[in-house]
Every structure is written in structure tokens, then in C-alpha cells.
Length: 268
Image (cartoon, rainbow, N blue to C red):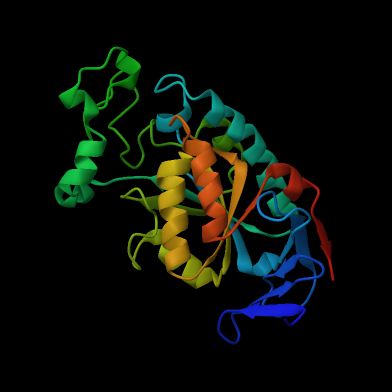
């Protein structure tokens, strides 16, 4: 067997060095590449990406999913802290930051599929015990100044405060979505942003791991992007959901954590 394996079509290849246990995702882009260790798969595996072809996609880290006025999500709040560290590192090495968030308009409400509407209308079926957790459907008034549920411009759809504070409107990319996945078709804002920027390698952080993060990551995988989950920058409240999703993510692509990114190096 050859010591170096090649995956993918010409011009869009991954190279895997079997002896070094290293993946090269740079596609021939001149150095420096950024190398970090993988946290899932064979021990000692490393990944090198081209920063100019790469983006960190931060999924749904909004007040609705994280703020104590809307929910209880301690693992999500812990993931925010690590995501902030990763964002700073990505900016240092020129990896683009993309914020992918629910941000609906009234037109979206008229075309929303029944199954998707039902997923966010649980309180119409089973009354909530805690009013903070009430879910009466997209566009409903959440009360207490929180605005209409997941509508663009509302307080509940805004980035969670620590992330709101570090966003850079002049250089970050902001994409609204109207489904669990931000790539459910080729005309979504995220799909257009990725095409316009020429990004091939996507790192994923966000909530919830097994829902909107996985939905977007899986669609990215189906459509040919490199997918790297940053496992400790993702969180979910689903019992067992984190472990199962991280385990499966290594089949869709590769898995790292915030420490491996912090310790990663730029080099030839």
C-alpha cells in the first residue's frame, strides 16, 4: 500500500500520510498551513488546513438557546467560553468567522413546513411547567421583552451577550437560517457565503450538537465540504446526545477540540 493516500477529485484532494498519521487538507495552497491534532480516531493523528480556505461556523449560540431568561443550558454556557478562545485563535491565523443563526422573517412563517413548525410549538401540545421554557411557535411573542420567537432582530434571536461583544460586523460573516440546517438547499445565505468566499474546510461549534450543528455539518458533508467538529465547543441537553454525535462526526469528517486548536501551529 502506498505511504501517502489521496482522497477526492484532482484539485480538491485530501492527502493522508500513513506513516505520520497526518491529513493534508490544504489542496496545494502555499504555506503556512495550520496543523492541529485530532481528538477522535487513531491516537497521534494530525490535520493540516489552509487558513484561507477555512471558516469557523458558529451555530445558534443565541439568547434563545443559551440565556437563563430563555433556558437552562450549563454545558452550552461552558461551550461558549471555549468557543470564544477558538474564535480568537482563528482570527490570529486568518480563519474566517461565520455566525449561523435562526433569523426568520414573516415570509418564512408562511412557508414553514408543518413538521418544522411542530418542533418549535411544544407548549401548544404540552403546557410548560416553567414559563421561560414556553414554546408557542415561530414568531410568537415570548413575553418579558424577549421578542417574537427566533425572528430576525428580536432579543431572543440575538447572539448570546459574550459572543455579541466579540463579533466583528466589519469582517465576520452573518448568515440567517430558517431550518435546522443552514445548508438545506444551495440558495441559503450560508451556502452563498461559502461559495463566495471559496471556503472548503469548515470547523463547527455551537448548540445543539445533535440538532442544528449536526444538521448543518451533515449537509455540508453531503455537499462536499471538509467537516471538522470542535467537540468541546458544541453542547446539547439531549441525554447521551453529545457522545453519540461526536462519535458519528468522525465518520462525516474529523474531530478536534479547543485545546488542540489553541496548541496548533502555523508552518510549512
